[in-house]
Amino acid sequence: MTATPHTPRVFSGIKPSGGLTLGNYLGAIKRFVAAQGQGVETMFCVVDLHAITVWQDPTDLRHATREVAAGYLAAGIDPAQSILFNQSQVSGHAELAWLLNCVARMGWMNRMTQWKEKAGKNAEKESLGLFAYPSLMAADILLYHATHVPVGEDQKQHVELTRDIAAKFNHDYKVPDFFPLPEPVIEGPATRVMNLRDGTKKMSKSGESDMERINMTDDADTISKKFKKARTDPDALPDTYGALKDRPEARNLVDIYAALSDMTHDAVIAEYAGAGWGRFKPALADLAVDKLAPISGEMARLMADPAEIDRLLGEGADRARTIATPILERTFDIVGMVRAR
Image (cartoon, rainbow, N blue to C red; front, side, top):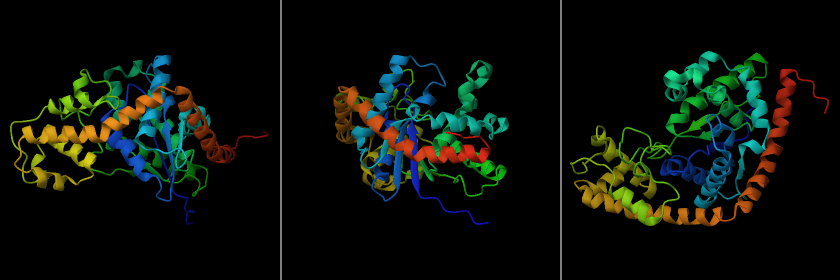
């Protein structure tokens, strides 16, 4: 039997824990903005249910949720073109997650790289929510029959698990064309932005030093200072991008420059081959300030009016619910739940 093709729909989200970094912008938000207006419905979510898989202060969580929304808006997500909302306002995410928990297998969850990294030797002390995180992520995607999921390289495994869960559901309930098998979309020169002090580690909101990362709320002077003080090595930039293979800090800065300038890696290397860091880092700092300072300024303006952010998130949730409700109702019906109302 040939499966019925699904209408293309893009879905992705960012977790509101800590603050937004350059990694969130280049690895996600910048690509979300580019996906708008391409003739495909786009949905972007603040995944606040995912945030509470580890303890969050309620006041901080509300602030972080609004800050992620402000980051989306300031970077160019247009709520008239895309559906922008926070996950907890659409109860279908949690409802579908339970159904998918009953489809997903424990062994699948145990193999998740992020679970192994985050739980480590303390797995028994971690929340059940953290273990089941990938099943909720599958629900986020499948609740809207999303077909494409822009993600960073570190989230690819979760989208692959979503495909496995969707395929098992379709097979078990003999509905081969019900849930689509979503495709991870991983593209661009900086899909994984690394730490400015250690190029072998991902840029993180929770790093020990603020100098490790560029926060999307940093002002122009701070952005410039951090790039000029970023760790490098003593060698000049090479003639080919491949020669940066064993130079993680150098490669990271070239990746960031390429992503901010919309240039290829090779074009950046062609422009700066043989250049020392005394030339490259100031150029990168100036480029970053030019691209990021307007966003941080707009975020500050938006955060000064939280009621407006809340209004936009609420309107987006209403629109999301209109898509989710019939899909969820059909899922309950397939599973065999009596739905009298």
